[in-house]
Length: 207
Image (cartoon, rainbow, N blue to C red):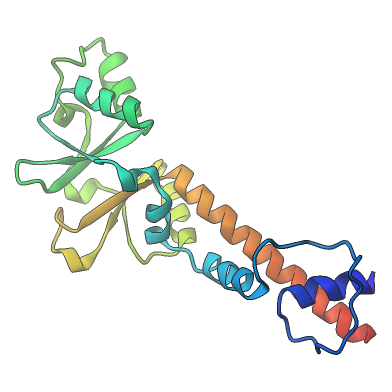
């Protein structure tokens, strides 16, 4: 047991003397990368932000905006083609003025018997800057999750003060899937860190 603990901790470059003998046959959590790289990756995972979620998101590689004057059928085609559930809505000056989701279509078009080829996005979207649920690019991933749960939404618009005022400073969109991915990475890093603290205590008390 002690040998396994020593191998695990030594592989993570923790503050254990290098002179300690470690069995090469010990069964412990293995890493495919160098120990310093693993530690660096886990440190980054503990500090993930909305910007990190955006970088990992499928929205980062597609056009995530649609004009408020576009027909709903165009919105649906974009969503199906890109396998997404929401789009940012823009006005004639390309400012983000709203957000539209598949739930808007279901509740405001399909359920009411309207047609998607005559109804505009503006008629069904959440419209108005003050009504949008946003986070700053630097918001921690936990804060993003809290805002999603608190406002009962599945997508967040990301704003950056460096890019102007309301409507022009929206730089992206992230989904609950993106948040869950980052939260999972952070949770794993936290668990590894806690395990290492326990192992260090166990090792130093027996050496």
